[in-house]
Image (cartoon, rainbow, N blue to C red):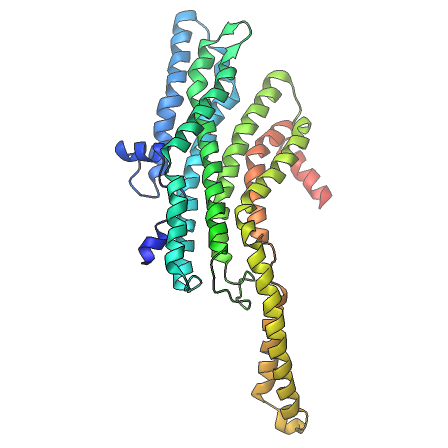
Length: 367
């Protein structure tokens, strides 16, 4: 029964996954992404380098396109990061499924839970959806391979890496949407939540774990964007400051995308906090009434070492847990990871312009 429920996977299923299985690139191991990234480099990047080398031997000069940063960053950083995020997110999703069963959060209506998993998995496994995503990725990449003056052979050679990056990004957005759909279906079930759970999320904290891994997806997208900006700085003299507004918008978008699936749990948390405060408040009043009746009539010597005093302190601590329940399932750690995933790939652009000593000096001034 547990296996049936936890069989839901964010990253299993789809055309590319089945192709990887058939080619023995994916074997259900955490290291699968390394083989997939190697295959991606072999298919999308090595031919471009070989074409550039052939051109150098034939024409006596290197192709200008080989000096574009986005070509190298896209193939060697962005695509591998999007693939490396798969085992990270997957491990956390499966751990969340096991937690739901072991903690008895889904004790009532387990058959309904398995049905929710199966319905979401059918969408995830749809070959039609992934085929459409692939077509969209190719269609949007084609205009970049055509210039007004004609067709650039080099641009056509780099087209596979552009299309693959966009496909992986679109597939991640689809997978992330399905994870939000699964959480939404889960939130409609009669879950057993505990307002006094120490995670301040009524026991739903592990369901946010996959979002921590999603920060790596954000980093992959950020690296691709940073590669394009680096080209503008290198070849057109643009300043890193010129991209600050877009960078802030991207960071905000990345944070929203990271926390959005878990936001469907907000109504559960609100009800849990509201009902918990009422129930625990009534219990605390009865406890305080009994405490005062027993303790206030004692002498100081009789009260020394009384266990009731410790219990009263514990009562206050538990009440603080209730008061601190997050109505929105956004932890500081989760938001921080999303921000770091968005900013770290852009940091080399700032370092290239102002230098590390100057950057540290400015940071120290602000601090």
